[in-house]
Length: 441
Image (cartoon, rainbow, N blue to C red; front, side):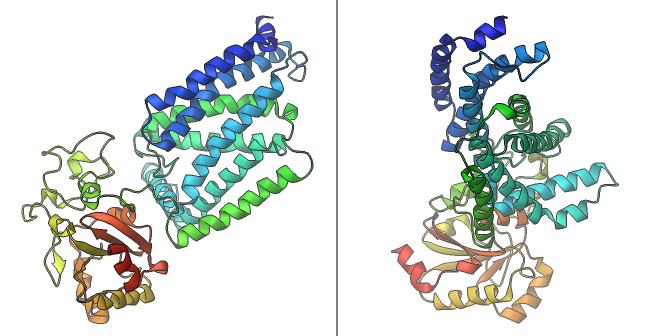
């Protein structure tokens, strides 16, 4: 009886409006990035609306008839707001992943590798091979479900698929939190990092607020009549699916990576993505300024670093290079073009030739050109004989993970002036001399 009066009372709307206003303002006091503000706003709004939804549903469940919801004027209002909130959060989560589908696939590969380490029967290699396709489908499907939810399209099917998806995510994040094997779930791509336990709690909350939406799915009416909700849901899958393929071929449209246009390359190198927010590198953790991760004993990912090598000179990012000196950090001053080649063997031949053509065209321009690569040093002479690179290849102690963080492309370009990144390209949109010189003006 108490729940019925609470859910049916018109006064609840006024109290709820004041609570909602306070919750909307709350994230601004704690979040530092726009994505964090949006995320926290959606999460904190779900709490009071989820409570109202459960308050609406609980009396009917007690009576044993969830369809007996007469006398609850807030039901339509609360259910539509919850559909918008959950759908909006899933849209943000799906969009940041689908526009950086390679980054999400790297995260899935990390999961499969950890599963294979724990369970010998798990065929990690099979899942690794299909990780890019799975990453594409999961993220695009997430956006399509978000549209279906926002516009209340076929809510019985939509809410059930939504529940299956959140249970899948909860299982992954629960594994990360309990085992400690994966430090970042990649739920929001590079836009926002959450600890494994934060992510797990977030998924538990979503499961709690999604359950009443499944039970009340018959009562949630479409936002628009006719075929429009279905067209928007299926159309979003096609549209964002094509958009994701485009960004995979080139670069993310919104770059959340440390090495984005406008970033200070020197700061991005020293204050890498492994550092917790607001924390400065410690001298004993990171004595040398290398383009790599910290030593194994200070970074849980276990990546190696030249920082433990006695022959690594302080202030160098690439260790030993082929055909020229190493790349000192003070070389970021002035005009510098980095040609990032993840692995020469995997880079398309036409892309490598295009980079050589660009480098030759910039001869005498005063632009220093370096090419960090994770290609094994032993194989460099063979590639040098084939291509006759006019630029130096920084090969030793360059970690492939760092190169993937720099440019989401087998071969890419980063143009800097006094350490500030002015331009960034995948090999398919490689700049010419005129474009490079224009940016340096």
